[in-house]
Image (tube, rainbow, N blue to C red; front, side, top):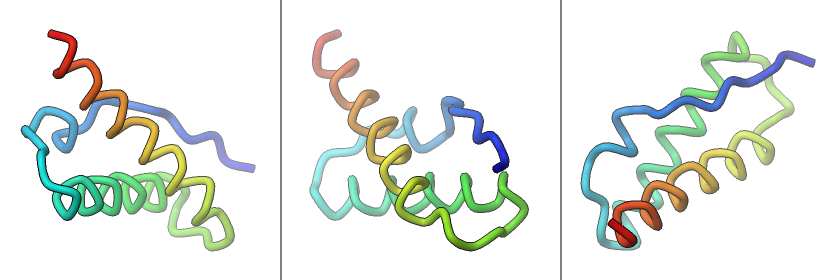
Length: 65
């Protein structure tokens, strides 16, 4: 299994507000994970959940600041 690095992306720096913007940010980040894996299929749920976690963490950090 290829290890996926969790990094701060441009997605997290952009202010995200609406549910559609949040979903799009998650989609973009999940695709970045897919790219990091070398476009290997079969890890879509894992990538999506990691992306959700990152985006939501970024939102919480901005709200707390």
